Amino acid sequence: MHSLEEYDLISPESLTVRYRPDCAVYHMTNIGGEGTMTSFEVFDGVELVYNDFHSAYCVSGKGTTADVMEINHCRMGRFECDFLNGTCVYLEEGDLAVNMVKNQTKNPCFPLEYYSGVSIVIDLARAEHSLSGVLKDISIDLCALREKLCAGNRCFVMRATDSIEHIFSELYTVPDQVKFGYFKLKVLELLLFLSVINPDEHLAAPRYFQKNQVECVKRMKNYMVCHPDCHFTLQELSERFDLPMTTMKQCFKGIYGTSVYAYMRCYRMQRAAVLLCQSSESVSSVAWRLGYVNASKFASAFKQVMGLSPMEYRKRHRLNGAEIVRAE
Image (cartoon, rainbow, N blue to C red; front, side, top):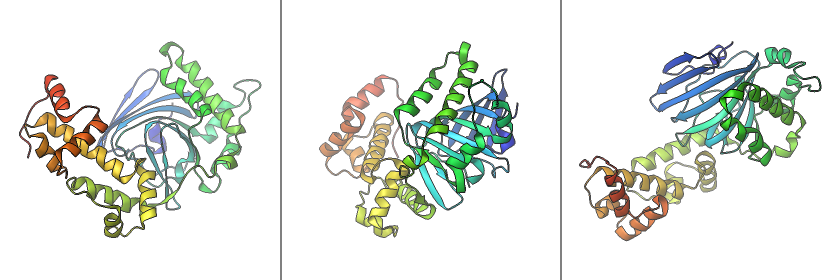
């Protein structure tokens, strides 16, 4: 069995590998968090990988010279793909992407700091041989599939559809006793599905962003979360980070899946929830920390995001044994 490491797909700061009779489990940690990749060899040259990350990124190697295709399905979170032509594209929940591994330039990133999904990693040279004649009436030309979907270092992205949902949803609930036979059927189903679709119908679906714009918007986000008490206007942010207003708003939503205001409101309420549970500060003091002069407006925003009033939230979580400490 060839492992993911042979393709230099992962090279994290800390990696442990456990080899089981039926799979390899890669557990990695870095300064951004941790993640697990569970890899099953479905055919020679074809691996199915379950990804579960609670991290901002997965550290990868320098790429591979092998002709390796990667098909990714995003189940939860968001997935950033960074390419040689200086652009980035984002998968959201339910999306599918097909890309050649050597076209990626850096580590996969997870802007929401969590990600769950499935990857199909295909070594074209080996898989072409192993897939030939699997079933009498099934013929899959992987080289033709590469040219159709990935020509010119293109990443093919297909936004969530019922067809994609049908193929992948069942992979997340496969009974152990039938999983290997099921994996084979689902991989073949996916490859046949991709073989017959018309990529021209999906060319307008993904939105690509320039890498320099993405990096600027990420700096902007980091600046805002470091100053949660400051409610910046969009105009102030546009001027401070020298980004046109429309570009800034579109790029931010592309990366994080929501508007600047909605993101920061959610961030502030999550920060407030921690303060309410782990400190003895009054609600008005917590509100003030997060830039709310009016405690009632803060309470209304908190309930909209968290589903409970600040006092109800504090009472429930203290009853559940949360430790109370003095906030700094």
